[in-house]
Image (cartoon, rainbow over the protein chains, first blue to last red):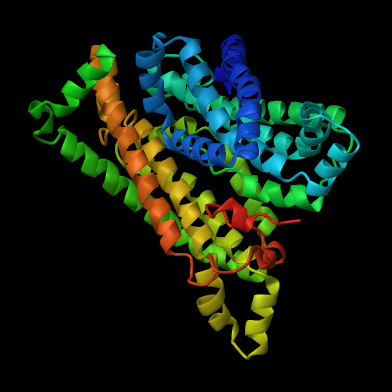
Length: 228
Length: 246
């Protein structure tokens, strides 16, 4: 405990580093996954390709991915950008399936009614499908947020600073309190971002009551456990 | 692209195939470790998951525990256990077994839950005992989801075992950390590609197994109208079949 009190500054700095690493991937993966998921839902051929590709990407272990991305994107191994790209890839891989299933859960009758009263394809997406798929998307994004925060710690072993640095540093110097503080802060940060998304969802989706179909889609969309 | 050529050269270099630190030895270590950790986790998770799935009790606790574990960073768990039990294989085994339990547990009880209640009621009404229902109805029908759970647990263990090379001298992860120390990018990248390959091969094997374990008559041959009422869809099956039609 004394270690924690005398190193509050360090803990705060690492928490900020961690936020910088984990918030952009969460936002980016949502922005990228929505059009991809729409494509997967709209075109049968696209569905197979996009969902298989995202499944394979998701199977790639994170640490090796951190090493591969610099060779492809030319980023430096230790740069935050490298981790942000890798974490975004996982987020997208997870989110695409959720978006596709969420859009598919929108009742056909509702969609057809929208067509009947004169909505164009574009406005059906923005004003009917996206809002109705909202609760499913939110649930998916919450999983992305929690797993991104947890995965971001892995970057510490290659020297990218985050709350994970508390693990490597604590391990090398034999300070248990430092590791425990790191675990607690990581979980707390994950819960904080999760809570923020819930609040955001309440504001944007006042009709959060789940329908039977969206609940079914949610169950299918339940993403797999995250690999480290 | 030059970097990848270097990495391939590293992978193909015969010098990297000899001895305890060679690629085959590391690969075997990685695989054995993965299999043992997943087996240990299965020994705990499958019976408990079946019990939860059959009785319907303790589900919320299981969900809470596995949800909470998802947020726990694996590296933190690994380093903490390593400080407790010392450097060596003990820490990775403990940490990875713990991490592999939630997905298998979830697969086991979700498999039971996904079964149409009327099927189980029919089994009971024709006079099957509870243990017969579990053995001949619930386990075969729940198998695809259980395998899905074991699959995600396996992939997670393969990934985390790479990370575990940070606290123990074993597995393919050694190449990543050794290369990092000597700034040998070919070795880091080569080792990374090997781990990725291993993960993708395992993913492929599980996809195949998952298809094979679907009991005959369940996966196909039933009109979609039937499926729409009968069940929650099984992941991994053709969405056109599992999705409810309107």
